[in-house]
Length: 140
Image (cartoon, rainbow, N blue to C red; front, top):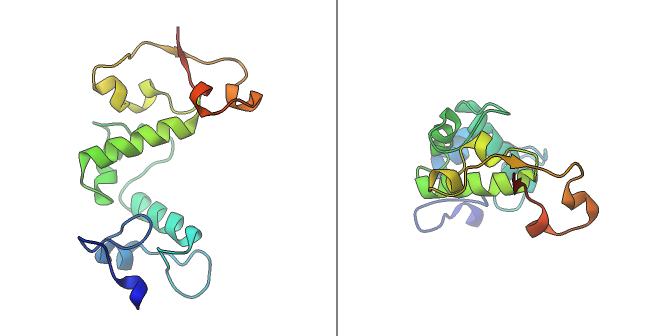
């Protein structure tokens, strides 16, 4: 029961679900008989995916600010700054030739940053053993 005590605004678990979202979207993905959004990474990821998919997430669709998917993310967290942060992390996790800033409508481009066309090396730098800061697309 102690695991159901929320944070300041009542959020519960690693992805900070409100109690109503916990009940509505929670998934027991690890099969242990209960939804555990604090300790079970499989439950956390499956529940978050369930929330997003139920509200209209479409894999491969643009998700930057101003897109339908950006609006879908508001069901998880209504804060625009929070959702912009998710977009930034997703872009960085996608790597050099994944979801580019231009495809997703990145917060960098929308803030007046460089929106020029990006090109990627034929072999991603990450696969050559370099760490993240070098693993990016470069302006043409």
